[in-house]
Amino acid sequence: MNFEELALKYGTPLYVFNIDEIKKRIEYLRRKLPNIGLCFAIKANSFVIKEIIDDVDRLEVCSNGEYEICKSLEIDKNKIVLSGVYKNEDDFFSIMANKEQVGHFTIESLTQYELLKKLAIKHDRNIDILVRLTSGNQFGINEDEVEKVFADKCPNITIKGLEYFAGTQKHNLRIIEKEMKHVSEFMKSLEDKYQVTLEEIEYGPGFPIYYFQGDEFDEDTYLNEFNELLKTYFEGRTITLEIGRSLVADAGYYLTKVVDMKNNKNGNFVILDGGIHQLVYYGQSMAMKVPYFDILSNNKQEKENDVYNLCGALCTINDLIVKQLEVPKLELGDIFVFKKVGAYSVTEGISLFLSRDLPKVVLIKNNKDELVRDVVNTYKINKPNYKEGE
Image (cartoon, rainbow, N blue to C red; front, side, top):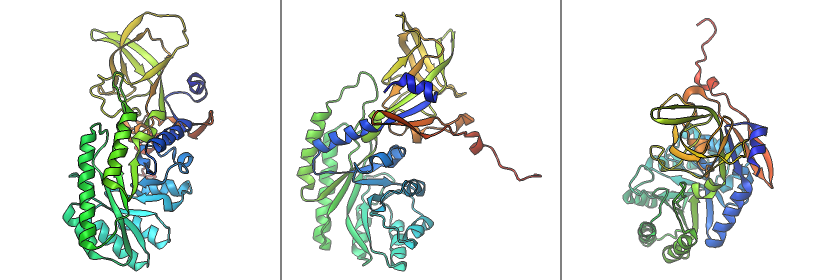
């Protein structure tokens, strides 16, 4: 990729997501974890769905809005796992009434189960569900409630297995092993008590991404050990890993330009045309950690280093990207290319703050660039729409 050409062509701030890199990442995970299904959590990045749908086994969809995105892209409904802590009757009804065949529904509360059961019976639909076992947070249901679902034995509902997710950025495999052991033993107890066969486990491993310079991670060894744990605890079941961050984080880039510079008694301050409303790093703490980045400069001459505080375009003292960053002397027009931005930045930032425009989104595929979202004017969303005469 030639970021200088992309910046010239599309301007800044700009998101760039490299589909070729995501596909290589998927191939790597397939090699390291053979015979394991991959479910992409589209909340991490909804712009890459269409390009990788044939490379993954499922999509996790957690809201009606995400479901509508999949419909607009004509995604095979059988590849969708409809999840989420809040599912309302209108959302369920539209799916049931139109006979749209969603591959799996997850159950995250007894209320969801009763609602889904009612609609399945009303519309004479046979559906497959995964019951989400809670890890102690607001997601899923406890073991007693899981058993109530199994005891109900609704003929319109087939329980295929369990879903389990306890958090992201999990570095410690001993914690993961403890989780797997618990879930495995509970699945076996359900099978014995209710005389059922649980074919599937959809497990969110929370694979870590190391965003900041100085972090080290031997992913090959980590995945080798993780694969052995899967064999130990879930041998004989269909295993699907629900991942988002680990699939797409490394393939994303955020380009933002130096638009102003100033200094005071607290140091040098650089103002960028982007900011924390569009650039999100999990684990960033008070702008003290340094993410991976490159600098594009029109001045190619060798320059002395200086120290800068990188600030975004928002009118808040919290819009600090990196403090006390030592780099070659900056100039107006220099462009920072922040790396590992493929997950969540584009969907998770406080993007409406100050009514700054949402950036363009460009995909790279087969070394060619394609604009998939133009600039979005957020002031149209933030302004009230009074009726004429009011």
